[in-house]
Length: 452
Image (cartoon, rainbow, N blue to C red):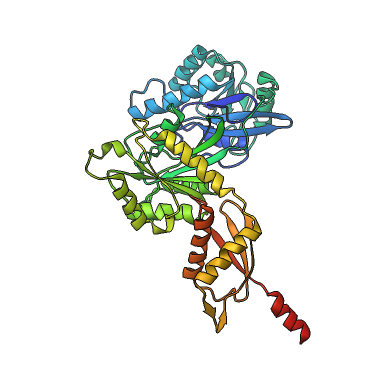
């Protein structure tokens, strides 16, 4: 796996509810991590990029660390924290200055000393300049003078960055970085195996997997290089029907899941093979379609379907029947727990990402669409529909401007026919096709206008 960005890697570590995610958002300059005034909101590792004058670094937000807990979900969070420590060049150990040193803080301090990583102690929630000796208790953690900050209000953040820059120094970007990565959002209902699929694609436990629905909350970005191609996988929270979403925390998680579609090129719509296509699956797939993203439908947990009970062709037929608006999306069958189908999935993602970026010559597009009009001519308000010209105006999704004599009277079903004609001619697998009808005048009509 490649590092997400150039420069040193900084891990933010601390017990639950000391303000780690607020500090992370402050450092990266935008709301990347969900912040709520309850412990245990963050569970996975979140990566962001921080720039301070000419210095750049990658910062990792981690979940609340409790080294002594045996609760399975907390143990999973602890594994994510330890993985972040293994990547880090320096650690920001965040404590709550108002509460002082707790027993968990001392346990974390022992873990950090064993890790051998340089540590900068950040005393958070200091909303006014501290009185002399007010932070003296924090010295006994063994990491020297604490840097007092208020992540919520931005106080002391510049001083913290100066300290981090001094501890890490300037690190040049690695030579030969891969080209612009393909961003891939993994979306679906809760418990269809999205996080397990991301881990299978990475070949490691990058995101936390637990049998309880709603384990993933933030949209978790992970960069990897597969066969020379760079990808950013975005694991998202499970999206339930609006009527079932009541908790503010879950509402925020769903909003961030949907926002992830806006910054990706490919959407993996994950279905549960054992449950088939549900109404909520169709709803989620509609989000990807409306966002104009290249899509791949993933039938996950295929290993749970008894051999011989149903054929893949029958499953694909059911998908086409229940998701007719996504008929352009290829279907892949995977078993995340066994790693089956992952190689084919990468091949398909690369294919649809490439198709979404294709640019087609205007003359060829015009020729194909004129032939489509000849096969199925229509009249609008007594005049036959005439195509003056057509050209591709953008990619991701492929969008075409058609100059016609009657742009306002074209029924959506005929527009769909023209889009399918383009797909039949050029492929464009995985991507929706957008058509924009504009007013155009034929040379003969222009000549008549001049004579008048």
